[in-house]
Amino acid sequence: MSNDLPAPEVGAEKLGAVFGPASADDQHDLVQLLTPEGERVEHNEFAFDGDDETIKGFYRDLVLTRRIDVEATSLQRQGELGIWAQLLGQEAAQIGSGRALEPQDMAFPTYREHGVAWCRGVDPLALLGLFRGVDHGNWNPADKNFALYTIVIGAQALHATGYGMGQLRDGVVGTGDPGRDEATIAYFGDGATSQGDVNEAFIWASVAQAPVVFFCQNNQWAISEPIERQTRIPLYQRALGFGFPGVRVDGNDVLACHAVTKAALQRAREGSGPTFVEAYTYRMGAHTTTDDPTRYRLSTDLEHWKLKDPIERVRAYLTRHAGADESFFADVEGEADEVAKRLRTGCRALPEPQILDIFDQVYAEQTDELAAERDAYAAYLSTFSDDHNTAEVVS
Image (tube, rainbow, N blue to C red):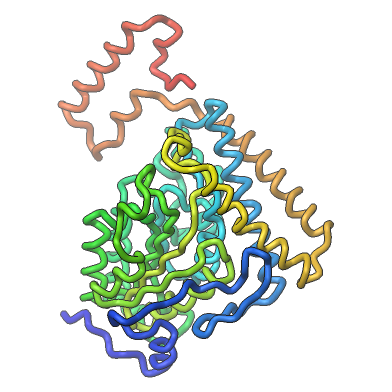
C-alpha cells in the first residue's frame, strides 16, 4: 500500500509561498507579530487572523497557565509533589500552538506542556498526580486528543509520527473537509533534537508524508547543556536535510506562535506533509525542581529575557490598543487565585504514594520474578524504624 498523497488541489500554491522552498538558500527571519513592547508588527508570510477578544482570551490562558506552574512549583517545595517540570517563560509557545489545534487534531507532549494541556481541556489537577507519584496520568488521551506525558526524551516524536501515518491510512488527511481532516503535533525541546528517536521520526514522517508538525521549544538549555553544544546551525534549518520545511518563530510571541502553527497544521491536514517549527524562547525557570540553573548560566541572561516576557507584552498591547482596563486584569487575576486554591486543596487530597506500588501494573499479569523483587524490597523497608516503616514516600 502506497503512502503517497497527491498534492492538494486547493491551497498548494499558498502553502508553498508561506513556508518557502526547502533549499540551502532558505533563510527565514524570526517570525514576530507582537514586539516585547506590545506593538503589532506585520510579517510578509504569516498573519494573525484573530481579533482583540481572541487576544484577551490568550492573555487569560497565559496568566492561568503561569499560575498553575507557579503553584505546582510551590507545592513541590512544600513536599506535596516529588518533582515538577516548570514552563516559566514558555507560555506563549504553548498557548499559541495549543489554541491553533482543531478538536480532531492530536497532540503528543513531553512532561512540560502544561499550557497545551490547558488548551486541550485537561484538568490541571490531573497533571499533579503524575508528579506526586500516584498515577501515570489519569486523563483519557482519546477524550482530550492529548497523549499522556512522555518522560523518555524524544520518544513522543515517534509516537506522533506513527499516529500521523495512521491518520493517512484512515483517510482523514487531504479530503478537503475541514471538519474531518486531521493533523498531529509533537512537542519537544532543543535537547531532544540530538536524540535518535527524534531524527528517526523526521525520516519516517518525511518519506511517509505524514501530517505531523514537529514543534520544538528551543529554550536554549538542554538541562545544563547550552544550545551551541547541540547544533552548529539554527535548529529549524535541520528540517532541510530531511526533506520538509522549517520555520523559526519568536517563542515569546503568542500571536506569531499561533499563526505559524495554524499554517503548519493546515498544511499537514491538506496532505503536504510535515513541518518543523522552532519556537525560539528561554527557560526562565529551572529544568525541573531538582535543578539549580545558577550553576551553569548567568543571571544577566535571565534579566535580559525577562524584558521579553510573553505575558507582559500581551498586557501592554491590550492596555494601549485594545481598551482593556484594570477590571479585566483584576478578573483574570481573581480567576487565577481560584485555580491556585483548587490546586492546593486538590493536591493535598490526593493519596500518599506507596513505594511498593512501583511493582504493580508493570505487566498485565504479575511475574514470579517481579513478585520476588517486591517481597525482597518490602523486607528491606521493614528494617527501618517505625516512623519510616509504612512503605510510603516520605515528603
